[in-house]
Length: 130
Image (cartoon, rainbow, N blue to C red; front, side, top):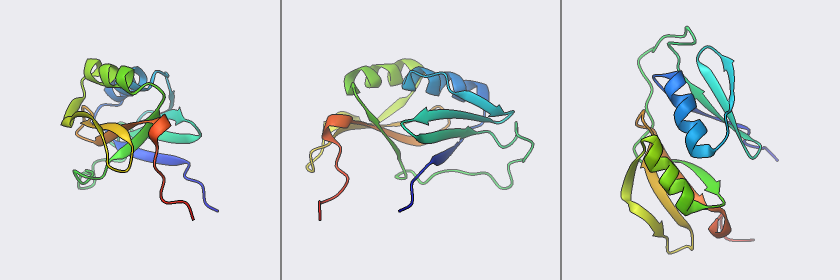
């Protein structure tokens, strides 16, 4: 069985990304290169990546599709929502919502336009059990 161990998010300012995600996730993370800052998210690494700061250049740019969210499970969704607002997130889709499949969550855009989402860990839906 494969294990997801890293997700890369494109950013245009690695220091701003370090500050933003450190505030929202509540952990400082670790700078691993001039343009990469890693955050351990329960065994999967969120890698904020500034290709220019790393010397890789833009090479045509890089953006996620508007509906291609990176989802984080959190223990306190309301507190995370407030931290996201304080850190500069743009909340989309009307704030915290309850989905028909049972998840309680909200969607946002980070300061770099990346689509991110936070889900109450007590309501996670990972598919129908077999």
